[in-house]
Image 1 (cartoon, rainbow, N blue to C red):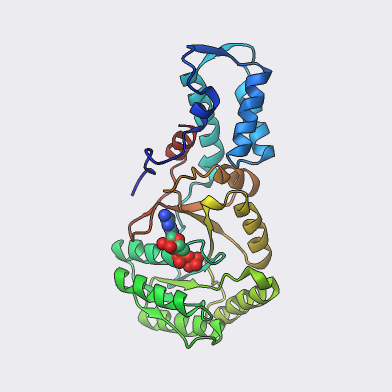
Image 2: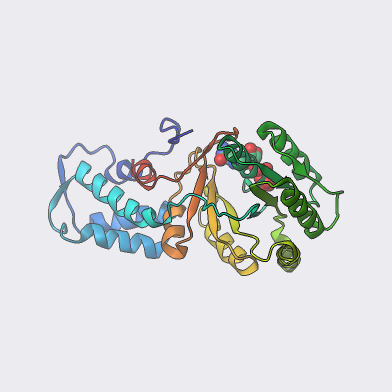
Amino acid sequence: ASAPPPSEAKPGLISRLIGRSDEPRRLLDDAMLENLEELLITADMGVDTATRVTANIAEGRFGTRISTSELRDALAAEIARIMAPVARPLPLYPQKPQVVLVVGVNGSGKTTTIGKLAAQFKAAGKSVVIAAGDTFRAAAVEQLQVWGNRAGVPVLTAPEGSDPASLAFDALSKAQADGADLLLIDTAGRLQNRQDLMEELSKIVRVIRKKDPTAPHNTLLVLDATTGQNAISQVEIFRKIADVSGLVMTKLDGTAKGGVLVALADKFGLPIHAIGLGEQIDDLAPFDPDEFARALVG
Ligand code: GDP
């Protein structure tokens, strides 16, 4: 699992901007900058970010003739500069267990990401416990058990419809008793009833703090990178209902090249701890801003 497969991906930004032109150098004028800005907006970067990136590209270059490769390098450098501060692996703390609450809408890839994270930590020699906190979705619990088996990690479950907070409490008790390094807690992602979800998440936090006042140590928001601008509103919503400390961006292996990541980094500055590059257990990679920028620019 490293870079997304270039073959099936959409053409990068530069080839969409330049087309098939074989002109060696082109005038960087208002028209070209306007096209660039529009292209960045259609690539989900959002208006503010697109405007700023375009202005920075123009600076010192406006009115000059620029080659395709110069433009490509300038754009990639500009994007990588925005992304560099957010490229940070999940911080590990000395607390045992480190409690990681995982939130996000259904379908974003929460279950899969928890399975992948569990496998990665296990491979790094850490002992992990998973709590299947989405007790209302039997399928999610089953799926998590499959992932737990694959990763060789115990998955704590509770009967369908039972209180997720009490499961989280029991899971933390078990993780503490076992001396586990990490506890990953899955949560429900029903945004249809935001008030319910907010109460459910705050109750989980309240209850686990009875066992460990410093928990949760991370609150990971899992976002599907193919949802484009939708990801922005999901961050806004989840930041209101949970103390989101970092992001995992999934499905970056598909045709979407994840321009929305640039908008997210620029707007919220939340760390991107990892990216999902497929449905297999090892398809989770650290976020590499340079590689990402090059793939996006094309
Ligand atoms: P949840 O509802 O948030 O728990 O989402 P799931 O973990 O069940 O994932 C929803 C779907 O997305 C499943 O079919 C996963 O296999 C798929 N999925 C998750 N992460 C990735 C990824 O990084 N790449 C791809 N291509 N598919 C993913």
